[in-house]
Image (tube, rainbow, N blue to C red; front, side, top):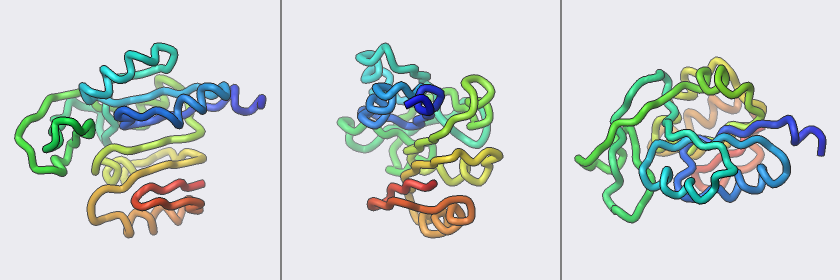
Length: 164
């Protein structure tokens, strides 16, 4: 309805699956996708109607090394080098605050940023109305508890959380 036309989704770390974002866009929601990985940049070329920036999300705006996954068929690269690889590329990272300055306040923030989510959440100055996050590594329980101070987790699937 009317509310959706004024809504905004930021999706950080879209990889090669924007099914959620495409559905939101179909309903009139402005979706801005962010992902600095080469496979995602190539993938997003088939969706010219979806706003896309080849930027990562981090707790500071800066250039960061992104390490490739062990399996070259996989898309997810990580700042934290989750898979212990040696091949990397550098990409621009922005903060959530910078995204808000450039594109306005989001209603939904979706993050699948391969381990960087902890530093990003630690430095939140803005808590979106809806947060969708996939946790990586061993701090998941601690951060799920922290998010519970600001949100009610309405759905959990493996390491994916939907919090309102």
